[in-house]
Amino acid sequence: MNDVEIFIGNRRYSSWSLRAWLALRASNISFSSTIIWLDSPTFAARVPRLGGSLRVPVLRVGERFIWDSLALCEFAADHSKPASPLWPSEPVQRAVARSYAAEMHSGFPNLRRELPMDVQADETRELSAACWQEVTRICELWRAALAEHAHLGPYLFGKFSVADCMFAPVVERFLGYNVPVDAICASYAKTIRAHEGMTEWRSDAAGEHELTDP
Image (cartoon, rainbow, N blue to C red; front, side):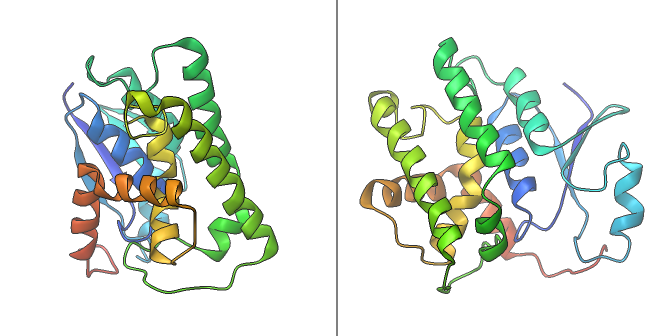
């Protein structure tokens, strides 16, 4: 597939961009990436021209635009490598994996507010009871999936999937803000942090110094 471009925000802060970019990187799609700096005075002017959305990421495929991270992840899954599908092949497992992705997509507002993604974060924060409930729920989800699919691989559904892409920014939050979790969840977090896509994203984020568009 030719002429595919993803528009993302700052790698350091844009959790939704990370989710979609990771899925694209794991797919069979050749694509380029363009940053629209979140703090740029031109952000509000540039983004609406990308298909009418007011947020990033946005994917341009030729002259067509796709927006919303979950939609971009689905697009990537539709074009994923035969040997590395981004959803489980078994129908019920695939539906469960989609449930994981959808819950992350629409939920956990306290976690998002109290622990904003910052891949360079290294601090500890006091969390509200509501946020701790969300942390507990995420850990429950991780443990259940990892226990069921451990024989298939180290990711939530064995092989790396959209579900892992959706939770990757949560891993950055847990590690960056030193959120205490059990050994199983801590091991999973390290697995995601060590994924080659995450390594590339974090390396590129470390080199970001611009706050406005070049």
